[in-house]
Image (cartoon, rainbow, N blue to C red; front, side, top):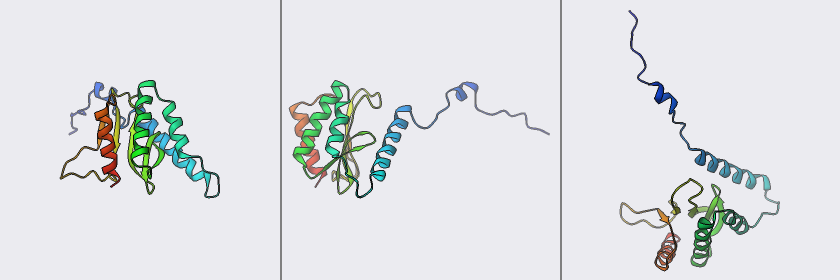
Length: 158
């Protein structure tokens, strides 16, 4: 006897198929792949572009609101932790120590978010008990916010 059961999936569920990544996420992954490919294709003897120039060029491409935040965050990070190396990471400004990302800026436009973010990787020494924030929303940079970012970057690099 054949089963008369039908699939539990409705036609509306099939129409709203979840693909796993948004268009913005796929774009960021493609940018990261291009970054890695560019590093690999340069070879060890090729002249390497200045990563600071690449980061500043990416910041210059941002919308005005994001650009103003990114420029200020870049200035704070470079002044607070000059030993961090600026570099592009998923197409966004990031700052690395010994080749590993410590913190990064993500503009609101990139993922169509209502705010930009400043994030810290697991390389950042921000551990505080068993729960601590690693990403912060940025809507504007007040003196208090700048002081907080300065302190977070200082702690992050140890």
